[in-house]
Image (cartoon, rainbow, N blue to C red; front, side, top):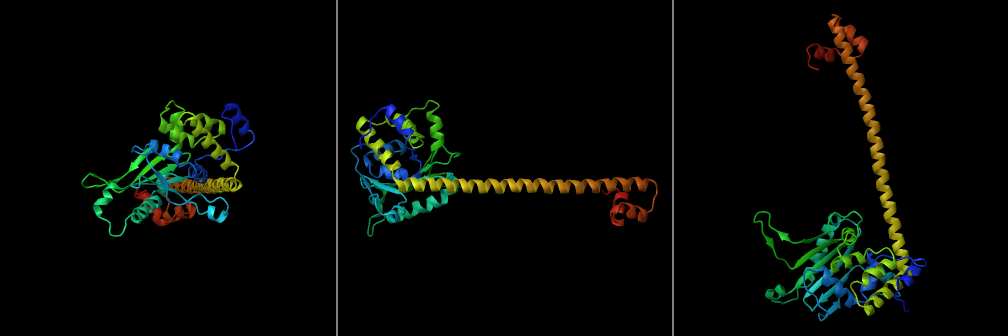
Length: 311
């Protein structure tokens, strides 16, 4: 398949085919596992280290299965190594970072333990780094970006560790781009949020040469024509919508119940206070406690408290 690299071509394509955004994990993996050199350019802008085109990049978890659907469903992460000493795990989350932090931390610790080789000198580990990139596609993510490291609450020191979490909030970066920030890192992260082929073509043209644009856009279009990925994306969107509606309904029901209970309690409290006022007036007229109790329904004990001005 050869695409025409023109705005008109992609505008026409938008009318015929739906873009599955690269913020969807399966879409991201499908495109970048087959274009590791472009993934390397992406990582160079995202990580706090310099990665050049000369740095070797290797995929550690195998090639993308293309025929067996059961195997496709097992694809979880992109895990690559740069120059055999920088290990990078990429996680794309549809939840807020704080909701998936513990899970991702456990996975980062697990990956760290797997990198230790039997009989290896501990000194050699100092030259090895592990980065877990958390790309968060939640529409209301609070974090724009962050680096999670070990911190001593008593010593107030930051302790270097083998693994670090790099957090990126996609929608925040999209806002930055459309508010005038056109740095490469912002553009790359905005690419993942592109809503149309036309928008994506415009964005990738700003950070890649013509040949790279061609390959990336062809990979994206092929991915969007993949029936399995399209089905899983639509299913995930529907599941998310159902979950959202369930939460909204539960919230609204809770509010309605709270209002109803509040009204009931308010009415009851108002009736009680009205009885107290009536009892006070009766006491001023020196009526007996028994008569006041019979008329108001208050107990003798309550009336004595009113008389002694305890209520």
